[in-house]
Length: 207
Ligand SMILES: O=C(O)[C@H](O)COP(=O)(O)O
Image (cartoon, rainbow, N blue to C red; front, side, top):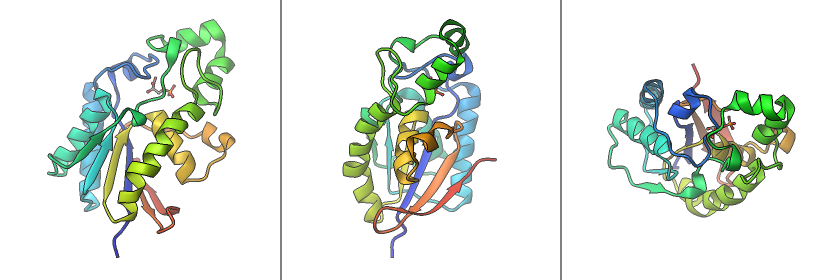
């Protein structure tokens, strides 16, 4: 019986995470710390004895670089990898490139929190989590999930909000439930799925 393995990992710290800037579809690379986090993620997966058959990532550098570093640690460089903008970070629209503290000063803590964590309120000119889900979920259902259910051990390196969207579905979280769900950079979450695509087990490799 194959194991229906799905590992999700948010990219390591990016240059703009460090500068506290809204990033979205902008394309900064990892910082030195981000490189360490991604490498450590790979080590942790290796320590668990995990091997993958396929990987998925976004079209953004920070996620692809994270994936490369993880695969390097796993001695799996060259693994078949699909890159698709369906897995991109939420588009932050007009907020992209702005400092998050400056935005709080300008629009207030509550409004910025609504833009960052509400389910269906988009930032000006950008995507809500619901919008992000609307393009990430079909990709998951059509491209990623069939492989997982057929026993392809699958690694997904993506972004805080594209992964929160998938986690909302996997963990059956409500719009309120997803509000408080934060994803740390470079921390793999190991899911094993049941044949009906529900979650059989989940292990968060934080710490
Ligand atoms: O795009 C960004 O700015 C971050 O990667 C995620 O931002 P958030 O923590 O505001 O969701």
